[in-house]
Image (cartoon, rainbow, N blue to C red):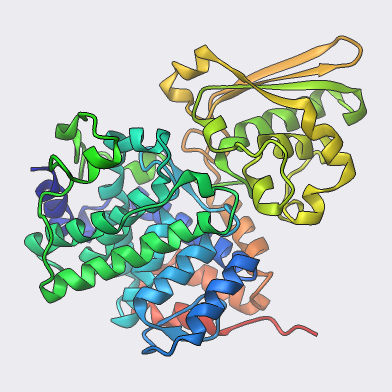
Length: 456
């Protein structure tokens, strides 16, 4: 039974069984997530959800990153998941179908802080949740194509798996927790480009936290929810028959956190990244000037246009999910940075003049290449008749071309230093780099929650 197989893996996995490389990648992803959460905590949507939770009186169990207060663990997970995804600068993973860390890590940190767990406990639970979800995700990718946002749906399963591990639930309790979480899972891709998209990550973190805590108390749910005829996989897959026997395939043997986790060098939807990279390369190699360009074709399979679909963006959030804007910005400036994603920058006249020149073209070749889900071929056509073309199957930051620890540290530093004073940026980085030696996660969360730069 698939749910039982997943639950057994969650319960029985020990820290000593985790490969050292998986631990190293986990620390890199955790540092990256904390950095983008800090940078994202002052985004408009982040401020609104932080204010909302702060106005509600609750028991102070876990800290809100950058918020200066503690709240219920489930509420802290909710806010922290949302702010960590606010910039869409966080990690992604194809077998997961979305963004794993912003759903899983906030649940683990909130419960870990509540129970004063160690860094080793955090790492084990985080990796276990990550692997459980990525062994379900490939069976469920169809539900992504019909409109479900898997950061919300699969994120809920990853979060509950990690939370169940941290709470030391037994196999039957873990099966129940997954059953509860499956009925809470949701998130629609139509909300991409709005504040609700990052809320999906927060919902997943909160859902997983609540489901595990309810199961611990004896709440009931179907214990075979993943493979059941009216269960998670089949219903979210549109009712079609799926290869449910493949759920859990490779658990404990193949670590997707090593082979598939990806971090972002650019603060936009990952679906735009290959095209951004190609445009930056062609621009530099051929000294292309924006005024010389007549048209830019972005040839892709069907996945990318279903996500980066805002063709005429007017807001910062729409810009993050606009192939037109990201390509136009790369062409105009030779770079794509955090400051490019403000309403003012998206509406800049110079970039708006380039945006209509960018268009999607279907590529049957890329559509049939499973190794190039995020691949693209870009053709830059100039007014003088010249054209420059390049194809690339995956972007920088993907598992095949990963960002190094030093790359991620530099990104973390840029993000965290927007909020924390220098000494605390450094202290947090050192804590995460030696997370397995940290006796109590609260020392890290105290800094992330209560420390802020002094502003004039």
